[in-house]
Image 1: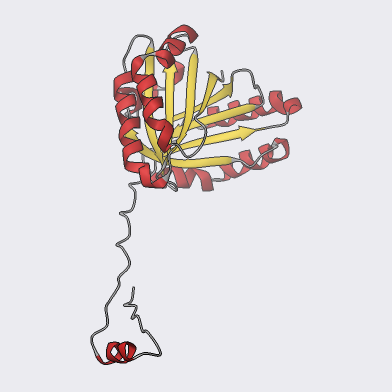
Image 2: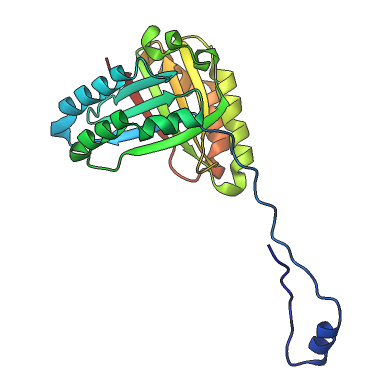
Length: 243
């Protein structure tokens, strides 16, 4: 950081500026670093003809982590698009997540998956904004242990100047939705590399209650408030848990 001195050339006023005290202009202080990012949301798109092979590969890799430090490693298949998958993972720390990504098993998994992909392997580290008790780190609380039919992963993007306002609206929706009739999970996470990008992770006992939530007043109010500050389309995707 340095002082930038303005000099107006070619006039008496400029000369007086050179002999007087210059005005210092400092850059704004950098934003505080985000907390550690122990969560990861990963989006995977494969060739339609390779959906079955990809499903098997994802299931084997998920099962291989049962003795690892992962607090959650859930694999989902998008409803109506069987070649689209998502992974929701939680680790004890950001370092544990990074260590897993660098492990031989993880590298072998991504290498085997690479020829099947039609888009880049899109892994996005996150940290928690508002999470429920099922996200406290016990394996028994992962989605496989609850009677859930519909899972939802939503990418929420607001323009940077509206980030704080948008984050407040996301938090309010999560806290109003969590624990309502038919709700099993409603977590709000912040993408570590872009703080104006958030992800909602939901779980519902059936499609009817999920649809009712979408039409409920808290959701309508949230969508209305988000509209003017949105930086992209509201990207809500419905999934089934990969068995």
